[in-house]
Length: 198
View 1: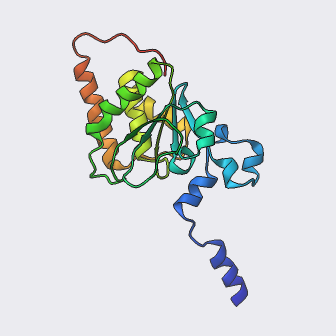
View 2 (view 1 turned 180 degrees about the horizontal axis):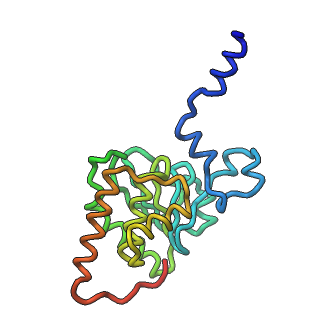
View 3 (view 1 turned 90 degrees about the vertical axis):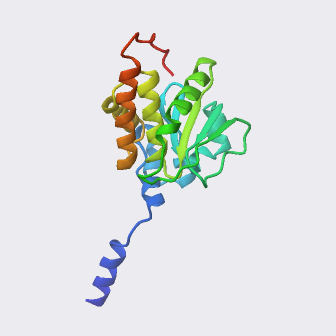
């Protein structure tokens, strides 16, 4: 009996968030072999949101091999503590914690414009935070809303399709709702010409 209870406890032991993220990667980002138990190294990935925008966790974004393989030229690090890759790329840090009370709103325009500027000159960007779930997703969504002119709902779905583990915290979702209203107000006069896909 005691042995069975021990097994049950072991089976239901809590799994760290990083382990959950590592094994719940997006099917379109993984090979069949990786899904069948290959090493974590093979599971590192940059998930494509658009032709010139990727989202990932910090571990993947700091893989020089992946950065070079995907021809990334701009890294946006949405964290206070995560490192940048060693490879030579343009680097932009947005020092915020994954806290609903953090102000990410004030960085939306800057990040969205940086991603679009990079795309316009033929570059590619990766946006990342520790786990690639909340902060990085919020920035990618803001970009799609501003430069692709998608609704918040459609932007969220597009990023979730690229990386299904994303989950912006409630505070960031409120800021995105506010940003959507702000963008509508800005476009109330003359609507700008659509930007090329990035």
